[in-house]
Length: 111
Ligand SMILES: [Zn+2]
Image 1 (tube, protein in one colour):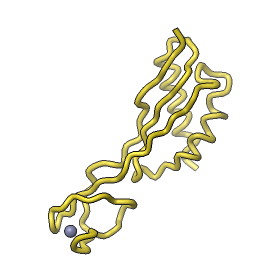
Image 2 (cartoon, rainbow, N blue to C red):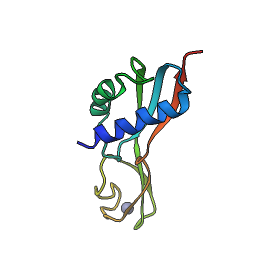
Image 3 (cartoon, rainbow, N blue to C red):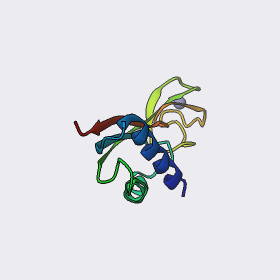
Image 4 (cartoon, helix red, strand yellow):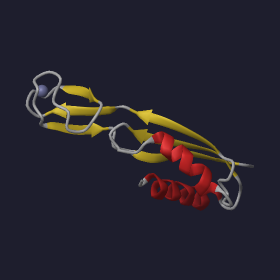
């Protein structure tokens, strides 16, 4: 369960950016191909943020779709999982264009 470590990293980012002020909201972007389960992050956030500036902050998770390009037929397509074949030609040579990201997009702090 690496979501716990990931969530601790998110809380650390909050602490670095909040300058000691309480964090009211955090917006996360999680790519469909990142291997991270949004529900697990939301669950861990409760525990990890307890006693920090991020305690009680509203966690908003935006899921980004996976996007890949087939190296055989050059077509871009939406991909749900890594290692799925090309939906046009069946090739497994798919290059991931996006969807592996996991980042904190926004942190709101109290004035
Ligand atoms: Zn293809």
